[in-house]
Image (cartoon, rainbow, N blue to C red; front, side, top):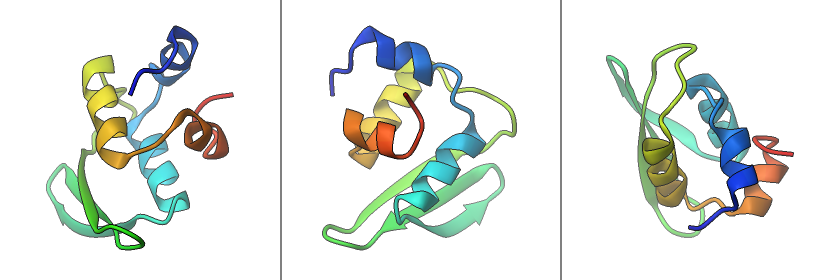
Length: 86
């Protein structure tokens, strides 16, 4: 997914807590928690699973964040709807 630079500038401050709140708001359900990893399932439509490494107040690097957003399947409109970007 190729987002414009302005989107990445806004996402670079996204914390693990913010990403998890957005996942839950989008209908993802927490599945398994082991240590610092939390797995989430999306059962509507296609069954998808994504694993988030949770470290409070830490931000993700752009490479990892890009891969997470790709695995989750969010578009720019989804990011706006979930209030991750303006």
